[in-house]
Every structure is written in structure tokens, then in C-alpha cells.
Image (cartoon, rainbow, N blue to C red; front, side, top):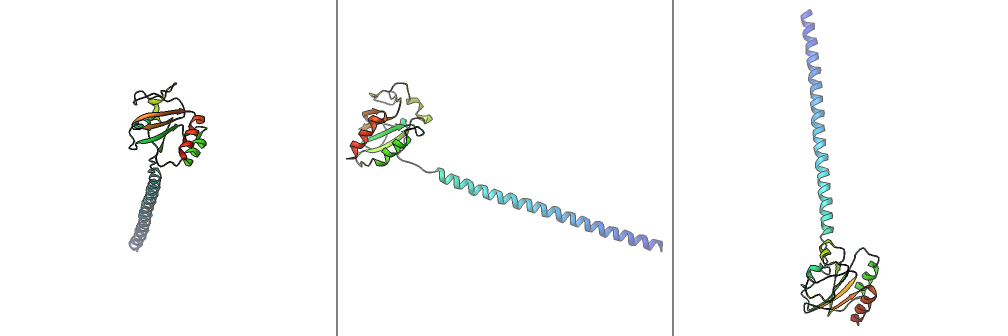
Length: 169
């Protein structure tokens, strides 16, 4: 009789151990699946957010040029307004650009503080520049190009405004 009792106790312990092992394996598999689900969910959300940001960045403004392209525009005659996009005169220049509507002479703009324009910035301007090598700008400037040559070089907001307002009429 003692042998039967030992066999029953061993059987019960094996079943309990097997149940515990199953529960442990099931819990482990469930945690792995949950972790993978969360990982893929966050990955998808990051990709969506990155694509939205990329769509916002891809905005191109054809009126903005670098000074290195000053003489390379396809128009026969055009203005290039050079100013610091973060300066105190930003509203003044934005108003001038918005009010300017002369279809004969296009108005481009260039950022005075853009790193790629740095080589053309100097203490003293050179209004008689004939090439990019000679070009020097010291402050807010309106340059009129006609047939690949500088025909007007106006510095300071007080000189730029009358020129752009005159061309409007």
C-alpha cells in the first residue's frame, strides 16, 4: 500500500510541475508577443511622423537664391533683395516683397546671413562689381541685374523702398 501512495504523490507532483511549466511558458510567450507588438507599433508611428516632417521640409521657394547664383538667373532683368531673414527689418522687407508686383522685372531674395553667402559679405560693399569675385555686400542691399550686369546697387532700407515702389507703377 505504501508503494501505491508514493506513486500517487509522484503523479500529482508531476502534474503540478507540468502545469507550472505550461503557465510559465505561456506567460513568457505572451510577454514576447506583446513586446514585439509594441515595438512594431512605435516603429510605424515614428515612420509616419518622419514622413510628415519630410513633407513639410520639401517646400521650395523659387524666389530665394544664393548670391553665388546672382548672375545666373534666366530672366533678362531682375532684382535681388539681400537682407538678413532674422533681422529687425524682416517685417519691412516682407511688406515690400508682398507689395511688389511688376511682371516685367522679377524680384528674388537672398539671405545675408546664409553660410553659403558668407564669402560675399564684407565691411565695405562693392557696388561696381562685374563678377562674383568682385561682389561684396555689407548690409541690406537691392541689386538690379540687367543682361548679366549690375545696373543698380542700393543699400539700406531707406534707399531700397523708393526703388521697389517706383517699379510697381
